[in-house]
Image (cartoon, rainbow, N blue to C red; front, side, top):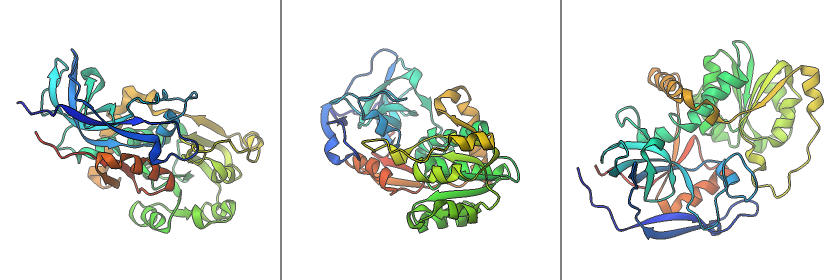
Length: 343
């Protein structure tokens, strides 16, 4: 099988390092020569790309758990695409793959860094969301770190996002009472009416988070999945039960802060409650990704896990989709559709 590949490809680069919340000026859409795959590599035509909050850390020069991008260098993230040329990379033109590639119409990658996608299993974009990194983050963060048990209360922030929405449903499958914090009434209704959360709190219209927790989680909090940090986490810590487990997944409330705010001192609560707080990276569980996605796929097929995606059309709109993450524009996984399959 052969396909005509254009001589040039559009690619996003980091124009400058943001101060505070990123703006469109921090991104530059360039036209570059379409690369040829080196030995052991393939050329991939991007169909969907992922934008995720952790990428904000890669825009800084300072140390982060993900390597920072250089100014002028192409941005990178999760991509699902079709192989259009192979140079011994273990894939053939027409194969659908996913991996970490450039924000570009065409990009090369070593075959060893790519995973084959079954296009009959689910919509292709799902491999960037519920069946990709966000889904596995929720799976391991709930089952390995927060460990909610039947009859316990599980609280998750960023609850209508790609990770939080799946985490809450997995906790419910474990028999826990699930409470989610989210930013709009529409999202709160989605959590309760479609995903089966026991309670949802709209933090944007709530003045007293602790009082809201007293109502939504009257028996206290046994397991907490933290995607947000900030004042909500301060309130949750004050409502932890003895032997509570806290899984720290993200701190999006602080990602654009130019100075880290000083909040209430909560470490004394951990002594009193003998609580455990553990940060985690989903990459630590990479050897078990396949098992996790298989289980999530089975839950989806059985109707036990629901998911949504927010799809932005066009590579040129990728920065807008990324910036929107910090405004809470998305419900479920935010992806950017770059092209339809050709092969």
